[in-house]
Length: 303
Image (cartoon, rainbow, N blue to C red; front, side, top):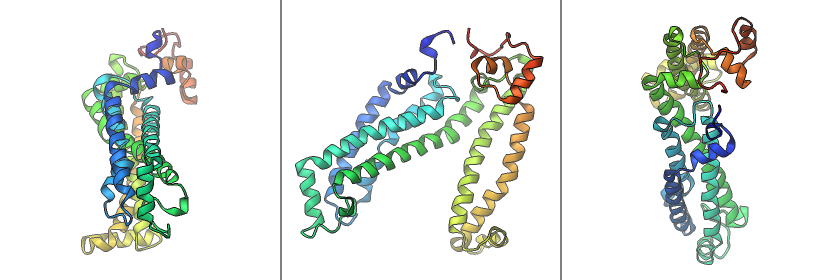
């Protein structure tokens, strides 16, 4: 890329993330942290989980905005979305964590927590005495758990919202961003492959989740036994849903494999562009022996 402002450097990714909407929603998230921590401070037995949940999940708001903005902004492209989601989640969680730590260190909030723990200082649903200073609880909840919540939300939006919409409405953009050949004779095959890729990513997420969750909650072990019992979900869904989910995840494995083979067979990469950017696979390098490396049809090749 000839324009430094379009280069996918960490500085430019941060510049993209920090748009006015991200700032506004980060402020809103910080306000939710203040409210949530303040209510949770006096909630000895966890009777109002919604408020503390707001504090932990507040960082989802700016990250969701950053991800959804990809649909109309054109940046970052699909190759950089994971880095952008991770960085945005980290930035949002850090801002909320700092606000939360300051809140519990303020004398009024600290006194509220101490009063809720009681004279014996032996119990608090959110600020357990076992971790010592309440700031430690905030680091683990608003900080770590908040980061995980924002990251997972961002990834879910990418996989189930952004990529499917882009694949259906702007497939040519995905073709170019994934360094596939944009020549007219290859357009149909590459549009088909990026749409299958969007479906594949969603199925992989569902498959892994179904296998992990199904195995955990299955009443029957091992898998072959669970599979033979999965049909009972229609008779007793509350008992055998784990077996059914586990079986569903396993049945998706061959579907995913077939999709991978079809995508690999149908897509037509821009080998020259990949080689120029240093992202070509071993198979790409072998094929570039029959392709002129000086010719690239993809706009992502350096000019």
